[in-house]
Amino acid sequence: MLRVSNRTLSDTVMANLRKNLQSMEKLHYQLSSGKKVRIPSDDPIATVTSMRAKTLISECEQYDRNINDGEIWVNTADRVLDDMGNMFHRVRALTVQGANDILNQDDRDAVALEINQIVEEAVRLANTNFAGRYIFSGTLTQTKSFLCKTGEETGNQNLTHKNGTVRTGINRTNIVKVEYQGNQEAVYREIGAGVTIQINVAGDDVFSATTHRVTMGSTKTSPTDPLNYGTGVIRINGKEIFYENNSSLNNIRDKINAAKVGITASVIQDGPNFRLSLLSDRPAEIWMEDVGAGNLLSSLQFVNGTQSPPNNIHTNATIERIDLFQAIINIRDDLYKGEGEKLSTTDLKNLDNALNNFLGWRAQQGAKINRMETATDFNEDTIIYTKDLESKAEGVDVAEVIMNLKIQETAQRSSLASGARLIQPSLIDFLR
Image 1 (cartoon, rainbow, N blue to C red):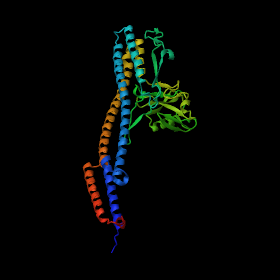
Image 2 (cartoon, helix red, strand yellow):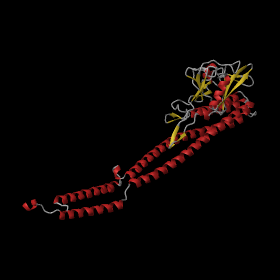
Image 3 (cartoon, rainbow, N blue to C red):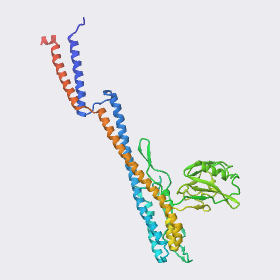
Image 4 (tube, one colour):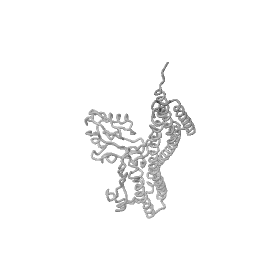
């Protein structure tokens, strides 16, 4: 038979009391904090669920911040494009008006003055800076999007009227050239797990009017003869293309077409000679340059190696392209020159092409806004559902905890009472 001493009884009672106190302390923590998990060992499954929920909530909140920043960027660009769109439609109305042969030259000059004001305001809006970032400069957000030059700066301040009269200095202070200074790189924001959206639009894209054709300035006697410019790499519209020393014009044409860079390359015959010509697939400038020590594009007189794209086209190269700014500048100048027929044909056609491209990009901005609003709603719903899951994982049922605490209090009192009866007086008690 097992012998039970007073010490054994005492140890048992004290152990039960400690256990009851621990249980009561745990229930007290749950009641005071509202959480049932203090350390992972309290409930490993609930701990994992809670940690995953906190991570998801944190990610969704960051996505919301990204969306808010993106919406501000897109909305700013959209407001600017809306203002510019109204101005460009006004230019079209003025072009139709100016093409009317009932107008005398003074009337056309008055129309040209209004269009000139629109050109200046359009360039100002195209250089919109939001929060220290130029919104139409691609990723070069610290670089002014467009650089304008006057007739005095370019030496093109005079115009010749269709009757032969030279209008000296008429464009001296007017903008005659607008050059893009940014790049075509995209600015992205992550709006969901693995989901990104481009929030910017490059000014070189949105303000284009026609496709861009560049034909090399030099000529070759045969399209199949090796060029012998060494091996190297060229970069066209951001993609690098490798060529060999024995590459011919035909080889270069095929390599460019195979690279699928939004350009169609062709070899054209110019009298007894041949030239390589590049045509963009959509209204946008062709960005091209030699990489490293390569000199293919420079040797073919496509580019000037001392400048950067898109303003590095060689002076001997043939360029066929009009952007939106140039289309409006041409309208203003043709008004000054009295070119009514050109206003109603070539100028109006180029302006319509520019507006079609411009409105296409406007539509994309609207689609981006709608997409980000949808993403915001999804993230907010996810946060609500996940917080509910987190609450269920680590939260407590207050009524249940109070009931359990009362049970533990009763058990503790019972333990104390029974312990007092079980633990007999010792010899020390009798010696007092």
